Length: 528
Image (cartoon, rainbow, N blue to C red; front, top):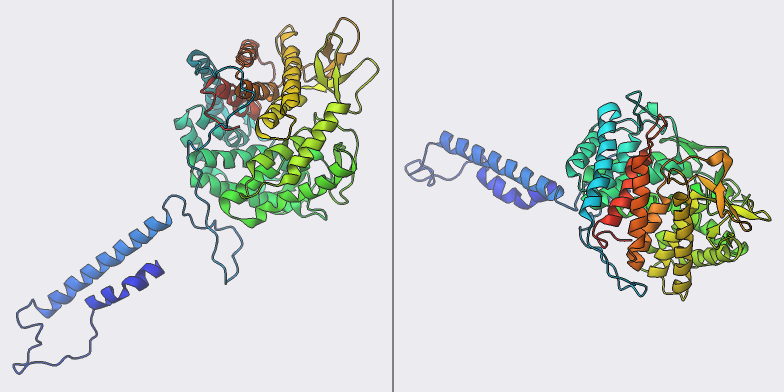
C-alpha cells in the first residue's frame, strides 16, 4: 500500500490541517468558520472522510496486487537480496493459444469428436474417481475392496495431484475445483509424515500434475503448492554432479546410495522447467544440469546411454534400453527441446542428442519378428532367435511421430514409417491375447510361426498408457482413423476385464483416460 499512499498523501493531509493557530478577523472569527458548521462537527466529518479514503486505497492496492498474472512471491522462498525486487509469478498461459502447424504427413482429414465414445470413457473415469472420493479421498491410492486407501507415495494425495489435468481436460470442472480446493487447504509438504519419497515419481506425477493443472486453469493456489513441492524436492540435487538422488526427504536431503538410472535423472526437466518458467524462480533450473552430463555421454558413446548412473561420479554402466530405466530420458531430449520453457532460441544440443540416440536405436535395437512385425529390444535381452520388448517401450512410436511432425531435419518420413510399424507391434501385443490386454513384456521370435509370447514372469497388465498415448499422437500426425479404432478396442478390453488387484494405481485415473479422451475429442484441441 505504501506507494499508493505516498502518491495520495497530500490529499489525506489536506483533510487534517495543522493545529497551528491561524490569523483571525477583527471580530475574532476564523474566515473559514464564519458561515460554516461548528468546529467539532467539521473535524468529525474530516475524520470519517479520511478513514473512508484510506480503506478505499487499501482495497484498490490489494486489487492491483491480486489481479490476474500479478501475484506476490511465495512466502517460503528465500528472501531476495536487498537490491533486487522479489520475483512475481508469471501470468498463466492463455487458453486456446495452441495451434497445430501445417503437417506434411497428414493423409486424411481429422474426424469430428466421437461423442458416444467420449461418454463411455468419461463414465469410466467418473466411476473410478467417485470411488476414490468415496473411500480414500486424499490418500495416495485406493483399495476398493477394503474401502480404504494407501499412502505408499509419501502421503501427498498422489491420485488427486496426478489427476487434476485429466479432470480439467475431461470437462469435469466441478470435480477439478473441489480437488484443487482440497489440496490447497489440506496438503502440507512440510509435514513430517511424508518421510522419504521417490524423486522421479513425485516429480513426474505430483509436481507435473500441479504445474500442468496451473497452466490449464490459471489457478494460482496450485502454482503456490507446486513451488512448495519444488522446494521440498530441491535437496535431491545437492550432489557433486548436480544429478538428483533417486530418493529425497522433503526440505532435508537426498538418498539412495548414489546410484540412479538415466530415466530417473533425465525425466525431471520438463516439470522443473515448467515450474521455473511459471514461478520465475531461478533455483528450479537446476534440473537442467543433467543435459550437460548427457551431452558428453551421447557424443562419447554414439548415442547409446547405459541405463545405470552414479550421481557422485557421473559414470554410466549397465544395459542400453528404451524400456524400463532408460525410456523417458530419450523422450525428454525432444520434449524439452520443443517445450523450451526458457523462451527465446531453442537448445539445439537437445535436438542433436535426440537425433543421435534415435539413429543409434534404429541401427542396433530395432528388429523384425518371424512374420514381419517390427519391434524394439534392448542391448542385453537379444538372443539368437529374438529379443524382449517391454510395454514401456511403446512410447517410442508416439515420440518418433512427434519428432517427424516437428523437426525439419530430413528424417521425418523414415521416422514416421518406423513409428507406424512399432505401433502395429504394440497393438498386436493387445489384440493377440485372450483378454485383449498386453503383458508387461513379451519375447519376440525371429523364426518360426509365432511372432511373440508373454514373458512368463511378466504376464500381467497394470493399465499402462504408453500404447494409447502413441496412438493418440499418430492419429493427430497422420489423421488415420485406424488409430482411433485401435484405441477404442483397447479401451473396450480394459473396460470389460475385471481388475483382480486390490489396488487402484493413480495412473489409472491420471493417464489412461487422459490419452483416450484426447483421442476421441476434437483432434486439434490439445497441443502435442
